[in-house]
Image (tube, rainbow, N blue to C red; front, side):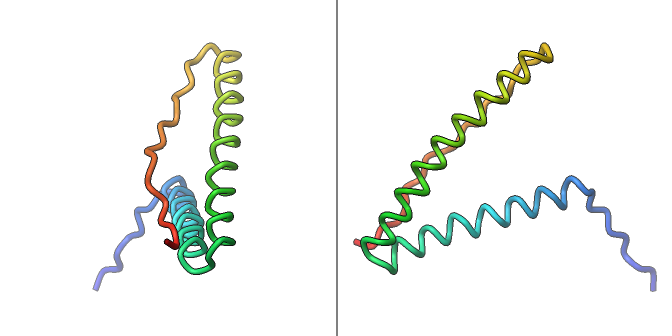
Amino acid sequence: MAQAQNTRTFGATIGAALGTSAAYAVHGAISAAQYTGQFGKDVAAGATDAYGVKSAELLAKREQLAEQRGMVAIPVVAEQRRVATAE
């Protein structure tokens, strides 16, 4: 039997790791909100707020670097989703 070749690139491997980490973070925040009452709501709110602030900072930095290189920064358009709450 011939062995199957692993055709996954290094970039795809890193991308998969990032996606998996993001999924754990999102589902962890949702679980915290569902199962820990007010503490969970605070965790979810803090995560949402911090994400928005850090995302804006990173976008500004990427735009600045792209401008220095004579490029156009690709904006990140995050789809807003409803966060589950423990209500």
